Image 1 (cartoon, helix red, strand yellow):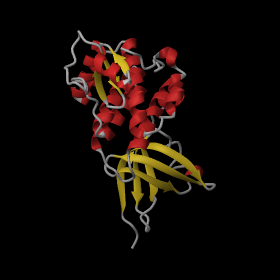
Image 2 (cartoon, helix red, strand yellow):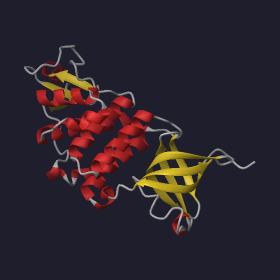
Image 3 (cartoon, rainbow, N blue to C red):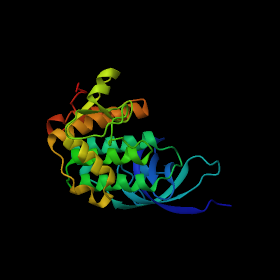
Image 4 (cartoon, rainbow, N blue to C red):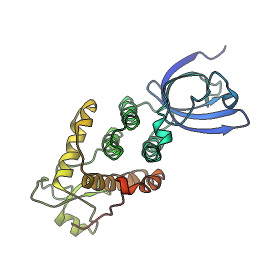
Length: 265
């Protein structure tokens, strides 16, 4: 009996050639999570797939399961949003690539997560619409780490429990995933990334606000530097490898990249 077809709303995360005419496509869908499929004849398609199976594209896919339970078969693709700006603006491509790579690192095949899906779509729409790419990446990463079970601890020192307050110095420990006060940071030998009181309050707000209100938060250049440094190091620790796209992002550091280094407090 032929496998029943189904439709999913999906973001394309990766593509690679398979033979002369086919494409292997990794996508993240609302209904079925991360999956990998084969689009037969996609590179020669004049109708079904032309200019649709591009990285970052948001589309509706018609698929069916393979008999062996491996790759799904992708039969049709209807494009919702191409996110063309993300492929034509190098700085936005670099930012979107960090988002894409984080999804590939964190999500297992078949893993469904509606919160992460809607967050990723929110970030890609914002980037394509011209919003601050640095701010979007900070807000995305804060919510993303929280959604996958690694919410940064921003209320008090991880070691001594003293509450974060404007009159005290705090840093973000990427090893512990939260704040450490100046005394505990010095005692541990791991200084972390210094965060100003304003940056800490901003990060706290970003974790609490509804997704549709996140764009109201305003970040200064100093906040961008502090947050992106801390979140980059935290992600590298969580995944036990670097996010390769960050090197491309750093090439735009004069526009707000993450070249700040961990500093002593």
